[in-house]
Image (tube, rainbow, N blue to C red; front, side, top):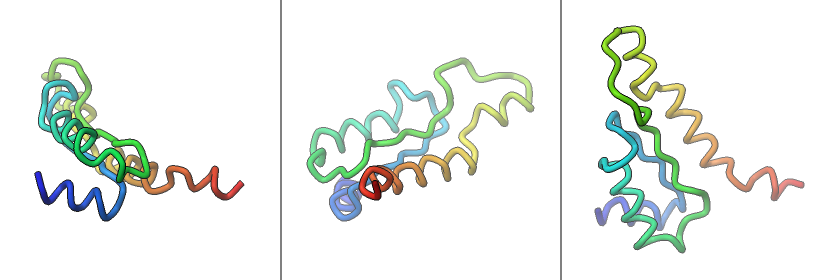
Length: 90
């Protein structure tokens, strides 16, 4: 936990990736910890990239869409890094 908090203090950002459900999982616990103990350091909203809040599909094709992809992770990171940049540029 301390390593995550130190990193948030340095970067001001947090993206948590987890294959589990977004509720009652490790990602939610990490986000809650950071919101509680390092909220003032955040320069962007915390982003969670998780499986949807739905049962795990049986079909391999649907399963691939269910698990967080590289594209979803990349998009979340870019949004977090770009947060506030557009408003500052205007």
